[in-house]
Length: 104
Image (cartoon, rainbow, N blue to C red; front, top):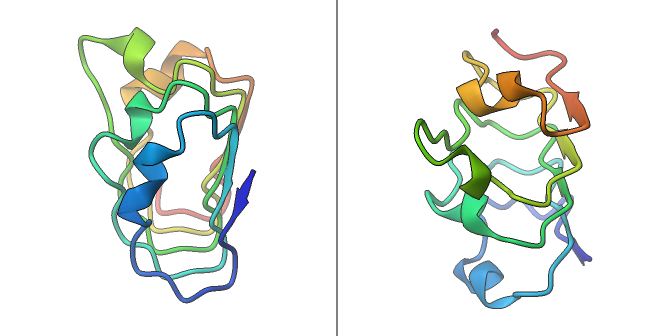
């Protein structure tokens, strides 16, 4: 579990990708505007909490849906600036998704 809440982050640390056994990422209440393009490839992440940031979009994959957070169970991106629901979330593989208070 990595907790980065309330740190005034503008982006996620690049070292995140070296934490191969990371299962939970909590980075709520920051100023994150974009996610690294390959974050969805992190194979063991089960919980991603990015609520109350400034995200305008999430990484989306059109052809390799299995590679989009393959272990993800819960995603909280509420209170951001998202304008579109990624196609992969419409497939229903993630059990719990919170998209409240966005621009969707």
